[in-house]
Image 1 (cartoon, helix red, strand yellow):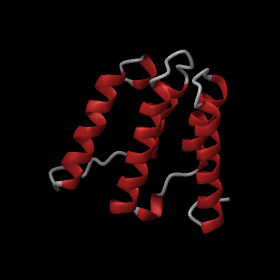
Image 2 (cartoon, rainbow, N blue to C red; image 1 turned 90 degrees about the vertical axis):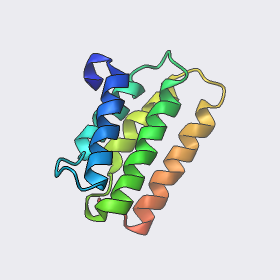
Image 3 (cartoon, rainbow, N blue to C red; image 1 turned 90 degrees about the horizontal axis):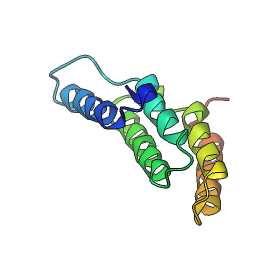
Image 4 (cartoon, rainbow, N blue to C red; image 1 turned 30 degrees about the vertical axis):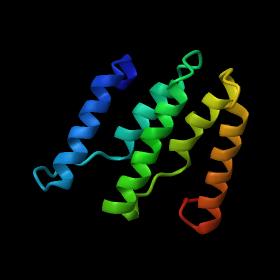
Length: 117
């Protein structure tokens, strides 16, 4: 869905998967690829100034979900890089600051040992 630009449907499906898994109604939990496909799809929309914040919200959901439910499978740099590249290429006035913030976040995670090598 995300790769076909059906973003609202992809986000609804992600929300449903997380809610059902949290409630114990389903063993079908979103994995890192579920989150990364949505982040990647938003990150490719350089002309849309709302795509970056939406991708960042999905990234934050992913981090929180794995912190709460599956810390062993924490997000790795592959989830952050497409969003970082979005901020590098988009023309939003705050993009350089957001890119720097995201890079600092990645460095902090790496230094804390929460990012794999």
